[in-house]
Image 1 (cartoon, rainbow, N blue to C red):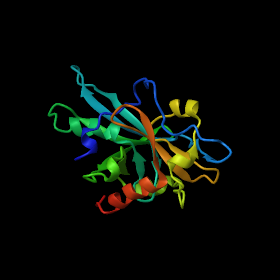
Image 2 (image 1 turned 30 degrees about the vertical axis):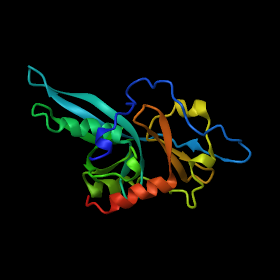
Image 3 (image 1 turned 135 degrees about the horizontal axis):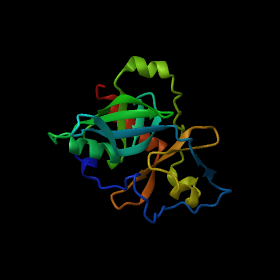
Image 4 (image 1 turned 135 degrees about the vertical axis):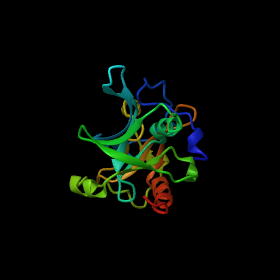
Length: 208
């Protein structure tokens, strides 16, 4: 990863610091209000440790919220993948990447896109088994067409500070207007539906 691989972001396993959300004090009457989608999917990185008595133990290392899409099985923040990629070279570490749907983990894999467009803190995660993914019949959230951009959307700042990075925000039609991501400075910002489309265009050009 040329850009996001060096990004230092806030892990959702930790307590979020004081967050500044730029450009969200818009007039509720003149802007489209959006709300966070229900969080039913997460992506986790787990260490598989072998104790002295030979019993395996799983230790959760990182997790992030994700949402389903047609191009990527799940889109999440790169925070969790940074931990996964860093530890891939550690000879004594056995780790597992899972997509967790309604509390049940399923084996997953990371789609390495390379140099990410716009420097977005997003990652593309796929189920190991396409057949399993198809059997789960996870509904895909559509992206908002003709997105007005995040500057014209209205967010509730208190609601944002309680929401995990990777969470999509939906308009009244149930379409994704933006997704909450972290910056290199630890602040939170929003990637618009158009930004997500640019990310997906790059992901579509990489084999699963």
